[in-house]
Amino acid sequence: MAQGARPVEEPLVRRTIEIHSPATGARVAEYPVADREAVATAVARAREAQARWAALDFAARARVLRRVRDAFVDGKERIADVVSAETGKPRHDVFTNELFIVCDGIGFWSRRASRYLADEKARPHLMKSKRAYTSYHPHGVIGIIGPWNFPFSLTIGEAIPALMAGNAVVLKPSEVTPGSARVGCELAEAAGLPAGLLQTVFGYGDTGQHLIELADMICFTGSVETGRKVAARCGQLLKPTTLELGGKDPMIVLGDANLERAANACVYGGLVNAGQVCTSVERVYVEAPVYDDFVQKVVDKVKRVRQGPPEAGPVEVGSMTFPPQIEKVERHVQDAVARGARVLAGGKRRPDLPGLFFEPTVLVDVTHDMDIMRDETFGPVIPIMRVRDEEEAIRLANDSRYGLDASVWTRDSARGARIARRIQSGAVCVNDVMVNFAVTEVPMGGIKESGVGHRHGPDGIRKYCVKQAVVIDRFGMNSEINWWPITPGKVRLFRRALDLFGSGWRRKFLGAPAPRERAAPQP
Image (cartoon, rainbow, N blue to C red; front, side, top):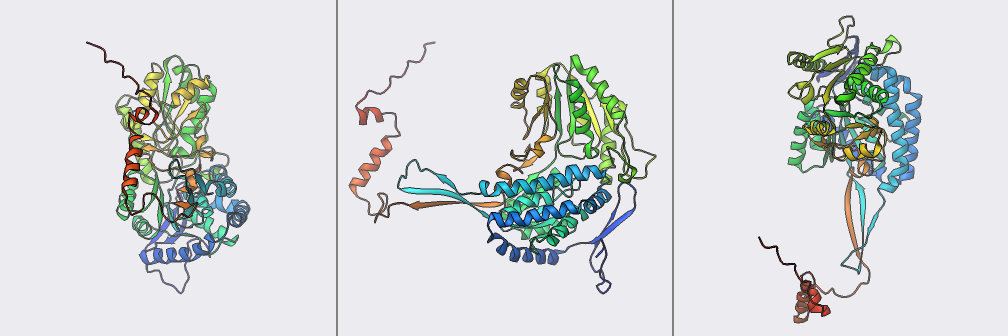
């Protein structure tokens, strides 16, 4: 069935979502909104499929997912068509930052799942007669509520470790970009993923609420405001959840940095996906001696960036995706200019293009009382601030309610690593930008208001599991010393055992004098 088409014999009785291209305004597709009954049906199908899927071993699950990866590669043009149409991002961005990430993730989790979820043996320090280990079991049905900025990789990609762990997944993509998740589900099922194991339900906030009520765990990526609501409801239900929320990621450029590399990274990190990345470079602090040179390099490079709709040919920056977001970017820039900032490049909407295009922008003379340096902008704007030294840069970098990602630039990698430890952020790059997400071996997650929990690394798949402790008696004696009946001998034994924790145990049991305490100094 074509995207958005409905069977003629079934009249539309529910609300629908109509999608228009943010780059051109053209109508893209229409999707039915899932009510509670529809979500319940999807979850019930998922439970049935999950029971059979969980019975397979890791190797069998991996074989199926590798076939899914082949289908994604073969269907790359179809995926790019849908994602570009919904988001306004260039096709090469879909191939590199969406599809490549997902395909690599399938290989990674297929290889690592059995290792990360293997039973973990423990050696009891006290109960030597026991054998103990930790095992991992799938939660059941995972509800993934995804964002609109990376609608394929942060829905389908996030589902891969959940599936490898033995779960079923129901996706609730953003109502701004619903088709990207659906095309992934369709290709996956056609490639042999069991029916019902990976599904999509469309809708607004109420559809997400239904999924929260019915799934066994929730994985949410989105705004801080919505994340608070998700966390509150999951807390009421005592339901596990992970949250990746906003970011206001700082970039610190020190006087000994490779300015050419740093400037290239700044432009890419601030403008890729039109700046609509949780780990975008959102504020830049540059030591005074190299400030002017760095700013000039960034401005020159930004002015050479090509912008346009996906079908315009080779462009680096496409449109923004969500209409309210471009309005927020305008407010941030206008607030900064009103408070004394200067615009060295861009600064306004593109009047020559029909969609949601905001010019790649560079701001200087910014201060920390401006919205552009305090709140997440999520747009193609690079604010650059002069600082005296690394201490001021670190202080300002940490002066934020967010803590998702950061970068430090210096030719001295040991110095960079030392500074990284002082940055209040879930991830830090040294002489690189936004690369944390591609290094799947290490965790990716935020602190402060940037979220709770992690994707990637061992925790990226263990979060989708119930952790179970198993303790097994080794010898099978008829009774244990702490079991009843209580006898005087047992009481004496445990009293003496408690003395082992006290400071006088050496004197009592070994006949050695207790260590003499050093006299306190006299005033």
